[in-house]
Amino acid sequence: MKFVSPKYPQLVVHDLGVRFVDGEAEVTDKNTIDALRGMPTDTGVRATGGRPPGSPGSGVGKAGNTD
Image (cartoon, rainbow, N blue to C red; front, top):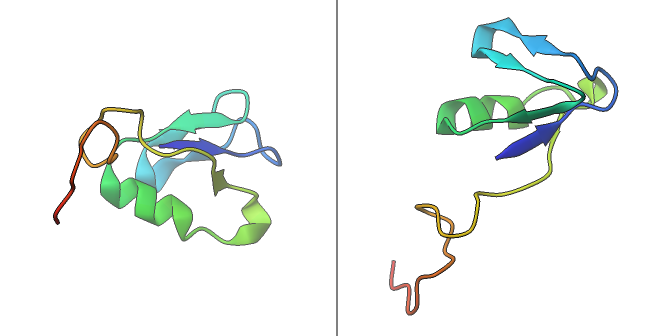
């Protein structure tokens, strides 16, 4: 999942092992995604994209999802 940090474009979240480069970070770990989503809004960090099409759990490319 893609996250952006326009307020702090070179932000490093040491506890999560996430480094933003030019205001963007790509995160694949579910726990890290959940933690970034829970960051205070004044940091400016926000999710901007879902999983890439066809990746597990994206729902793309699967007909008749019966979960």
